[in-house]
Length: 384
Image 1 (spheres, helix red, strand yellow):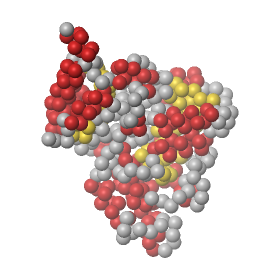
Image 2 (cartoon, rainbow, N blue to C red; image 1 turned 180 degrees about the vertical axis):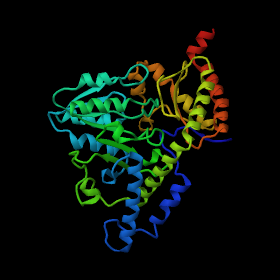
Image 3 (cartoon, rainbow, N blue to C red; image 1 turned 30 degrees about the horizontal axis):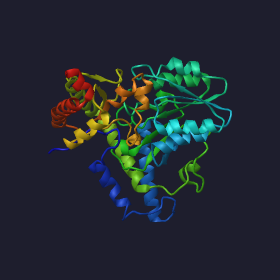
Image 4 (cartoon, rainbow, N blue to C red; image 1 turned 30 degrees about the vertical axis):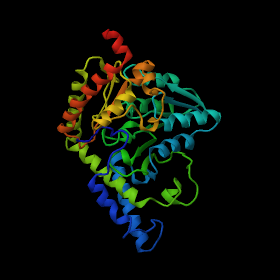
C-alpha cells in the first residue's frame, strides 16, 4: 500500500541537499563557532554563510538575522522581549499557541492584551487592528499564514498601520516561509520568525529577523553569541541545514514549484468537494499547499485514523494540539460550531507532492467518508 504524506504544515522531511550540507558539521568540522582556532573558524564561516542565506530569504541585513531553536522561541522573544507591565499588546484569536499562550502569560504580568477576531473567511481585517490601537499599545503580532487554513494575512497593510501608530510589529512567518516570498521591508515589520523544519530543514532550529535598533531583551542570558541577542553555543549543523533549506526555498519560489503545488492542491480540493456534505474552511487567498475541509456527519479524528489506515497522513489541525479533544480555536474563531470544527481536516501538501499522491488520496478519502457516515447515528437516522 502506498503511503502519502499530506501533513506538511506539521513538519517536512529533510531534503537530500540539506542533509548533505549538514553532514560534515556533525563529525569532521565539529568546531565551536566562538573558538578562534581553525576548527572554530570553519564553524564560524559556515554560520556566516547560513546567515547570508537567511538575509536573502528575509531581504534584510545579515546582522539582523538571529539564529535560535525555532518558531516558538522566535515568537516568545518578540513578546517577552518587548512587552512590560502597563503596555498594550494586540494579536489575533487565530494565532499559533506560541503567541496565544505567551500573550496570556503577559496578561498575568500586567500587560493589557487585545485578541482581534477574524472574518468568517479567516482573514484579519486591518481596520480592526487600527481600531484596537491605544496610546499605550507597544506591539502588534499577526501571523503571515495560518497553520490550519493556510489563509494569508494582509501583513503589509497591517505593517503600515503599525508604522503610522509608532507600534512595533511582529510576524509569525513559520507557515509562510518557503510558500510566500518574504520581504521584511515591504511587510514593514520589526521582527519575523521562521522555523527550519517547516521548510525541509532540521527540527530544533530557526531564525528571527530583528530590525536594527529594535530594543528586544534576549530570552537567554549568558555568552555573547548572536551579537548578545541569543546566548548559547550555536547549533552549527542545524544552522547550516536551515541556510541550505532557505536557499532551496528561494529556488522553489522562483522556478514555479509552488505553482505546481497549488495546481495539485486545487485538484485535490475539487475532488474532495465532489463528495456531498463537504466545504472549504477559509475562502480567501491561501498558501499554495493547504486546504482545510469539513465533512458533515463525520468525526474528524475518526477520519484521520481511517485515512492513515489507507495510507494517507493528514491532520485535524495544528500538530501542537494533536492530542487535544477541544475543537480548533481557529475554526471556532471563524464562526464554525463545535461539530463543524471537529469534522474538519487539514490537507497540506509537500512541495515534492505528485499527481499520483493526489490520485491515491482521491481514491481513499471518499471511501473512508462513506464508511464513517454509514456508521454515524445521525446519518443512519436520516437514511431511515
